[in-house]
Amino acid sequence: MENLKKKALKIFKKMFSNADQVEIDGDSYSINTYSPSGVKHVDIGKYRFIEQNPKKDSHWAKKAQRGDEIMWILKDWDYIGQIHNGEYKDFRK
Image 1 (tube, one colour):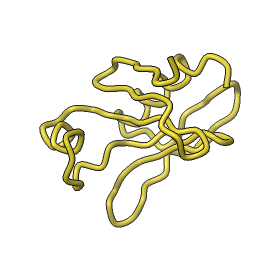
Image 2 (spheres, rainbow, N blue to C red; image 1 turned 45 degrees about the horizontal axis):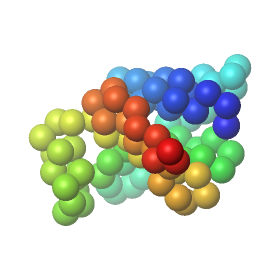
Image 3 (tube, one colour; image 1 turned 90 degrees about the vertical axis):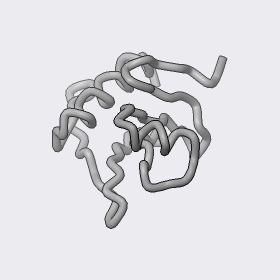
Image 4 (cartoon, one colour; image 1 turned 120 degrees about the horizontal axis):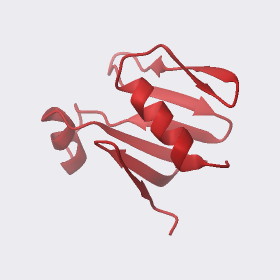
């Protein structure tokens, strides 16, 4: 995916502003919610952009419980990046 950082940040902003959709490259994608966890996610091709589940028992879940905004970026179920409170981190480097 070209411009992954730019697209991920756009999704992140929409996800945490409670939008229902995000537009990427002229296409509209739904921001879906898992039930019953309420965790939001967006799927674009082989990529999944998913909110941290605050109901889990992990370091990152504890941060989300405190109000941190955390979104993970996966490709083919591999974690390739993260956005934490608006700061993009690329795991591929």
